[in-house]
Length: 108
Picture 1 (cartoon, one colour):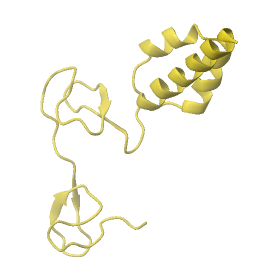
Picture 2 (cartoon, rainbow, N blue to C red; picture 1 turned 60 degrees about the horizontal axis):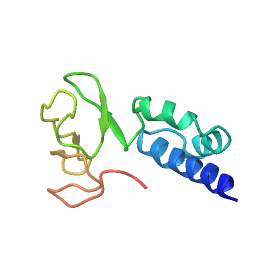
Picture 3 (cartoon, rainbow, N blue to C red; picture 1 turned 135 degrees about the vertical axis):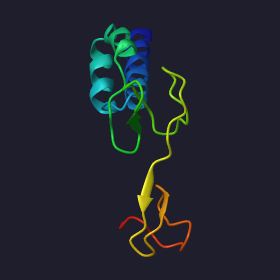
C-alpha cells in the first residue's frame, strides 16, 4: 500500500513540475508514476517555450515565466510586450483589451 502511495506521489509531483516548466503534465505523470527516479531528471530540465506561459529573455536568451518582470538569470528588467490596437491604432501593453478605446485586442 505504501509503495503505491509513493509511486502516485512521484507521478503527481512530476506532473506539477513539468507543467511549471511548460512541458506535458500527463506525459510526465505517467513517466514518473512508473519510473520515479525520472523525477530527479525532470528537476534539471530547462523550461520550454510555450505560448502564454513562458517567454524568452531578449538579453540572455534564457526561458522565463511569462509573469516575470525581470529575468532571474541576468537580472535585467524585461520589456513590456506591446500590441497595436486594430480599432484605434495605438500601441498598448499586450492584454486582452485596449487601454485607450477599451475594445478587444484578440478575437476569442
